[in-house]
Length: 469
Picture: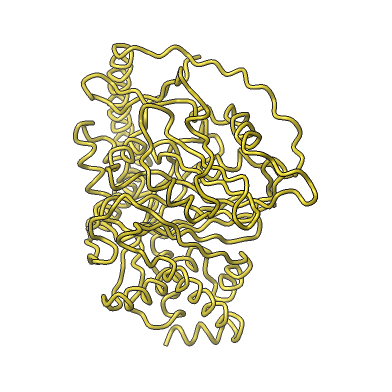
């Protein structure tokens, strides 16, 4: 059957947020160890390996086609001129950081499937490097990790790739898309009306609706609460990018989590708060609270093709003005616990749906208001990955750093991915606004060291008493 599908309102929001300086792609930077004593795969073999796996993710051979009159978000349609060589290219450097800068500083063209992978068959240190990106309208962070994992196998020798009989479906005409979009809009309005009637006719549904409305209002109030602008983070940005990296054993974060009765997400947010405190101080801004948008995964097992965006969000005030690592962690814990108890992710989801119900020509404006620097200073995202050792074409995955996109006037995002017993932090930054992101990465590492030292030296009850003074 035809495979075209209309962008969801959330997917369309990420398309609307893109500007020449804010490239809305998610991505990853990975390194692999070549087989011990085995033959190193060539670039052509690695490209063919990637191409053979695309049947597992049909969206990666689809491009966007707009609806006449702009009454609806575009549709994904099969790209009849799909060419793997336009998406998988040989890297222009043998140093991972330079490859990231080259790949991530370029906007993805919209006349083809919106993804790209750069492959270095031999980095300067002898490893294989793979840097990939996909537009946020195609995937969220979880789906990007899942796509990367489609290229991977749990064993070095996965056997030959199966043949791929893919043939593109004929492209629908503009009139066909116009009719589909108008029909879909009518059904959406009917579902909304039917849902409202059912809600008011049932006390149970009415109660659930009231609870959802309260969550939505709280999310709206939280989004409307202005972030304190930072000249370091929220000035106009350039299109140039670079990536600071931190690599830690996942056990370090687990020890901190267990010692303080926190979550991994709490530990990540608290460490980011401490790192930003140090960094703002070196830039003469002084310690101040920062408002972070924290994406929350809402993906479930039967989410169709698994692509697109299935996420909500909550906001967390990073207590950068707090001087001690334990008080910072405690304040983050209290906030995130309160968000969960108030069902903050459900409220965020309802707010996103509300934006999605805006008339499509106004959708861009609504999306940009939600992603304004007045709404938050930076994004901090925890993206779980596969827990076991993985391989690509016989090469062992060693490092995997996430890339979380930057909206306009947001110079920094921080992502953490856990893969195979490692915790990998990607500090993605505008290289003109934050040329010293490596110093910020060192500060993040120092914060984790401090929390780990406190977790190791004293007992949990003593630390709790200290934190609660």
